[in-house]
Length: 374
Image (cartoon, rainbow, N blue to C red; front, side, top):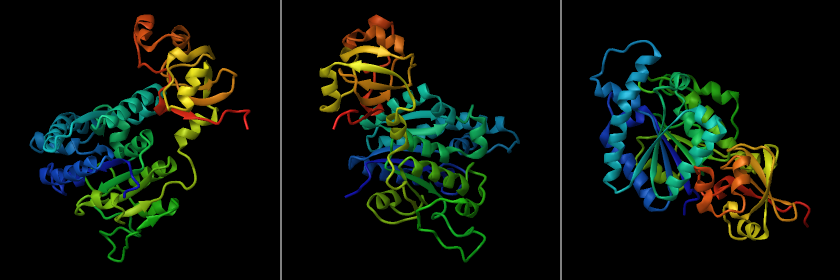
């Protein structure tokens, strides 16, 4: 039985083109077949897909390359539609709905946009939708220069608290040297500690079809493992690579998640260091949170303190003033004051808009042992 329940799979351009100049439908179909099989087993999967620029070249008949970022952005704008149409057609064979999300690091650095992205992705996962994520290359100038779909996939893995991030590429994993130049290079099957030596081994990008290389994959592995997600770099052409990895077979290079450390996001919420305010709740709401695993609704809120904004962290206090939870607020302090004590169906008529029926969603909450109790 697999120990993985939620996966992020990053597919590089070389994997999607099978080393050629255009999208390889047979290769993409094979990957879709594996994702569909895991989906049927009940696993939740997010796909971070490169390939928009390669698809743009294909659509435009492989125009003569030009220097400068605008040319690549133009290719990405043209190719993104072709890429998504291909994914849609292939997943439709298995009756699986898909969604598209375009992100940049800036989207995840902004707390409110982070919250919106997280809530949307978790809702898609809960409804059995496979989300195809790509960088918004049309506007993400910095990312298009450094091939940050690798690092983006790590940030997505942390965002949705994935158990495993799989980086599929055209090599079998991390080697002791460049296997294309050094015949004595050997595969490193397992990494328990990332250091500068491994980054030196990674070298530089070696393909003109993608925008990343092994170095960005090492950077992604560092980010993801620190957030509590295991990472595997493996060859996307290996038969049944995803099925075998999830089944526990050792392929490629495995980077272990940080040992004995809770996820950094949960630590950040639970620490209280980022708290911008407090909401006090009645006994019924406290029972709903602590015993029934519910979200915090406005009906149970009795008082609000602190001038927090939507997306800020707030402490949740029980009727006696003890901190029993912390979480990310869906509404700013003034809005919470106005809807406190009301049923959720009155949020929109009171505020004129709504961001959901919860003041703090369960997915964005950490339950704590009540302070001051034995």
